[in-house]
Image (cartoon, rainbow, N blue to C red):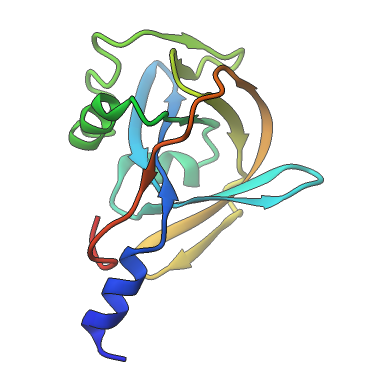
Length: 159
């Protein structure tokens, strides 16, 4: 199979669209993520893959807790907001409604729901240009019964 054929098939792997939010000290950050997968029942676990050059990847590598906000089909404006905003903590939540978890992490209002997660610094795997983090789900809440926003790409070798 050629490289272009592999890219085409990889791109057609469906994934949900979520916003990963975190807090470190007084800084908040958020970014659009799509490589998230449930990874265990007892205890509940998830994996999330982040490009190594993203600031939030470093936060997770250092053990910062985070939340995964599951987007609904009608929340494409959040895709564009978090898809173009840097995850360096600058104005990530400007003009958005959110509340905070007990740990202080911003959780977006109006999403299907969220999962609060914690990974240990050692709970990551190198995967080429990404890190794959294994995180324990320590809390969460279902807010709406809407259909999740699903993403399918044309090319599996780029976002």
